[in-house]
Length: 454
Image (cartoon, rainbow, N blue to C red; front, side, top):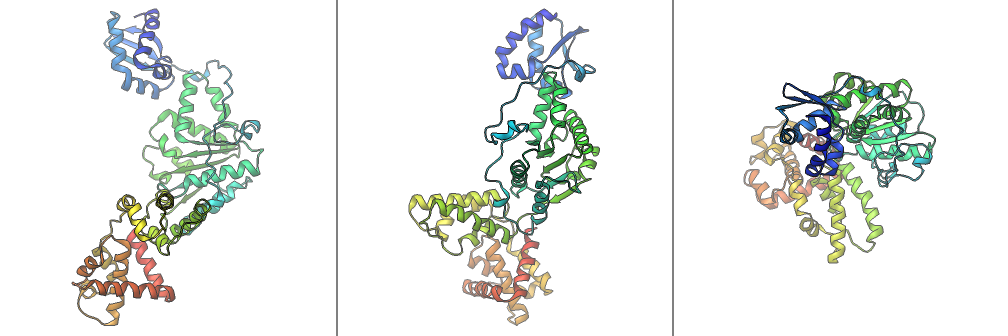
């Protein structure tokens, strides 16, 4: 196959794979020749070569063979010094729709759009996230800090992205002279590949090294992408050497990100690494109370029964986004059916969310934890003895079983030696009363809850 034949074949490939796939993956291929049945193409990156081989390799081989060429295999190679080729000026990118209009005027690179809801003012602070919040606030001041980078990590829905957006908003409003870039790791990788494909690596390097604050969300997505990690490593070093601030987020700590290069892990761990812990009950309740005020502005006449927010804070514990979404659905549903928001409505409206969020904690686990905490035998906890030293822990266990499982009162009673549901009801009510006035009981409940939810 000659270069002319390859040029003619490209029109057929464009019709076969579609215009977007052709422009992104086929057009950048540079035909280098055929030798011993192997057709060689130059590609901008190893990543692109692997992708084309996996997704379009068989198609290319079939189309090339159809021209009469004796090609049995396709090989992709990255030519040397590909990054040193002459570059053309990069076109002025359009700002992302959701960003501030001032971004291009201030020289900021357009990155991922910022969510106007994610401000420091709307971030509810509690023990699980107070350190992350304090560190984010410190970086958002825009002055020199003693830690670089700031690395925030935690599970889904714990507030990482909220804090990242809040930092970006604060910097853009209070330090407009700074060049702030916020984007996801996937966007960084896409821009890198695009720059390689279009022979604009010098532009890419210049753009990313010109920022004052670089914010990369979900950095775990570049793990295993060798070329992208290489460029990220050099970008990171250039910015740190220039005393520019870097803020990174991920779903786990640097050392736990599989397939992330050791040298990158080492760089990320040189700064401040902060874990956003799973939310506790008080924080979830605070978040709900904050959101209620926002919903009341839309639904001012809706009545909200006492206990509903507490119920949701107990039952939906794994994801703040799901918790907030449940409250939004509840207010909208109550408005549509013109009913007050009570426990019955909450359970009917949110049945699917409550099922999905149901804890895997069992009554048996609760009984074991309570027995260990109070240093009593499990057989005594569920047995018939009624002495005070056993009755109070037994009531605590019943209370936790009611709060942390979906078991009914009769089911809980059967787990405690066949006791009647009225006994369980009395025990739960007694602990509710004591929790409000007995600090020791309140502390015991919190310790046990955390141990069971861990």
